[in-house]
Amino acid sequence: MPKERVLSGMRPTGKLHLGHYHGVLANWLKLQDTYDCFFFVADWHALTTDYADTHAVNDNVREMVLDWLSVGIDPEKAVIFLQSSIKEHAELFVLLSMITPLSWLERNPTYKEQMAELREKDVHTFGFLGYPVLQTADIIMYKANRVPVGIDQAPHLELSREITRRFNHFYGEVFPEPKTLLTEVPKALGTDGRKMSKSYNNAIFLSDAPEVVTQKLLQMVTDTARMKRTDVGNPDVCPVFITFHVIYSDEATKAWVRQGCQSASIGCIECKKSVIQKVIEALEPIRQRRLELEKQPEIAAQALAKGAESARVAARATMAEVKKAMKLSAI
Ligand code: TRP
Ligand code: SF4
Image (tube, rainbow, N blue to C red; front, side, top):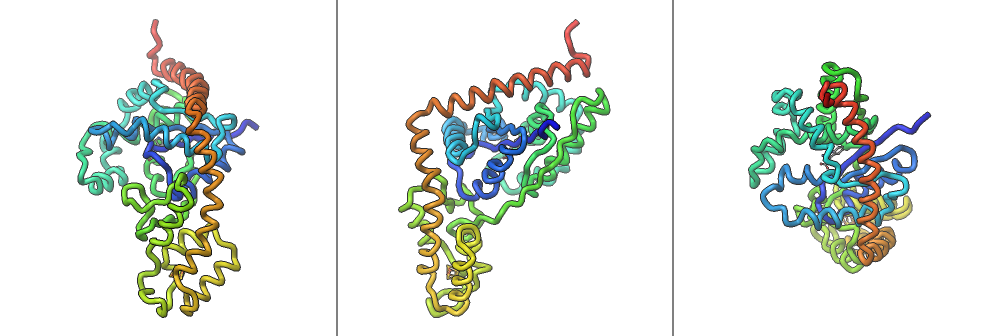
């Protein structure tokens, strides 16, 4: 049995944080051992919202790839590449855009939400509306069977399946319908208690040095009902517990926290200190590898070049089939 093919992409947002690690990368690490994986940097997708100011794109790509490699995404196991280096994605995007009804894109819930959310940016563009069409091209280009996504991205994938069916209906069965590989995304809260996000300035980055991690965690908000040391608290609503103890502490420590917090026999500082060391120990090897990789930028560049070579072979083969099916091959 050939391995099932998995494909996933990330928009280059720069340095990755613990939310990315537990929500996406930890999963990719497992997948690369069992599936035929393609992981790519969706730099064109980054332009759908950040088209006006592109000065950071290159740096963001580099930082993100350094993080991928530092956590152990392995170019020997998975094909990793940059979307814009495979021009076939643009070609397939054009063809898919011809058959995608506008109404499908307009009713996409993610589109509507983002339109409302990104109020400071003007996203009334053709590219932004077409985001899921480009994403579909990314996926079916490699005939991926499985796309690991969190529940929030599920509507996009449903749309990809619909576009794929429509293509196959018009031109013949060229593409398998991509299925979701639903990933459980543990809740990662930032130092202010909101969702961990670079734009909220509340993130702990994979590349943060031990003293930075310590500082950030010591300043992190706790159960807001626990104002004074003598107040009892509830770990189940405390961002420190939800995001850090749940992932990094052993059962005995968690029981100690629960008991101590609910009876006010321990203070928040003491509680935080019991997990800070664990977080640092988990991050240190990643950070050390990253420091090495930063000194040899050619390693990351070569990984992307090697990945692009494999991706290009697959993409060309698919486009030859597509053109044949659509009767677009030259005389
Ligand atoms: N939409 C994804 C994100 O926001 C990026 C992406 C682009 C993607 N194309 C994809 C993910 C194809 C999975 C499959 O990060
Ligand atoms: Fe949170 Fe720990 Fe303070 Fe309880 S003691 S509120 S779990 S930091």
